[in-house]
Image (tube, rainbow, N blue to C red; front, side, top):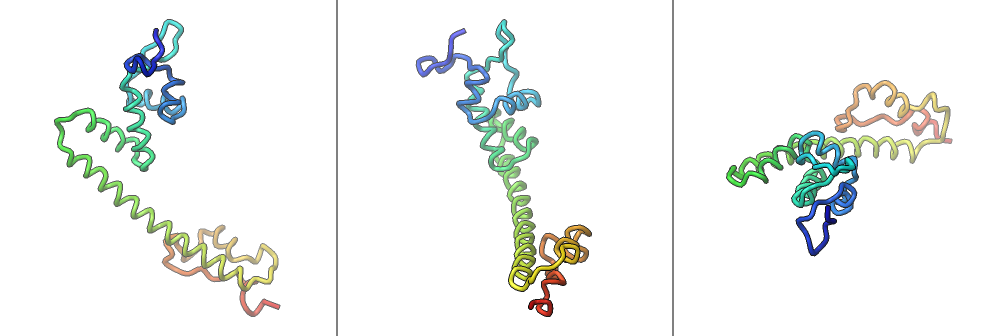
Length: 169
């Protein structure tokens, strides 16, 4: 079988060449094939996988979808939409809209987490005179799930007892 070259762009690609061209690793390509995101490769008599010319574009599309954080299920739906030109593109917008909503929710959670961690670090860092780790409220809160606290920053963490202004010498 002829190697794919710039002079013969329709020649089949080995999995290694496909990985190099798409920026994916070989195991990801195998996985995408296994779950049906890409068509199964043909096999050489040696058993090596060989992919059709369209596999490069399809895998690049999949890599970009996954890079945007779309789930495998959403990526499958987008691949299906991209391969069927007669379907309404509103479906793609709806998938992207749902993903945007999930990203915004996760962003709000991360911002709350950032506020909570910042409070821990600031309150303790500026006032902490040290002390035994067994008395550290940060460690206790992490150990008991932060009773009364959420990662969304609904409440402000209290500084560790040994970090209180009264204990600073």
